[in-house]
Image (cartoon, rainbow, N blue to C red; front, side, top):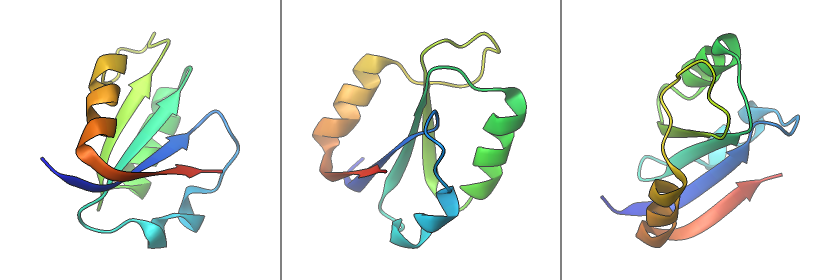
Length: 87
């Protein structure tokens, strides 16, 4: 899988996802990184990003939500042509 742009969103920051959605194209991937996340916030982000390829990297995953590993994240970085961090 080739990724044009890997968009990295730290959900521990208080950032409005809607401000960045216009910058995400069909060939892009959104990676949401967080220390912890509630099931409610997880589902909200999934709903907001439903039209986009989205993965989560959850460091402390008490709720057993779908998450990739750190090594998978490193592989994604290698596959993407560029990385954009949402700030």
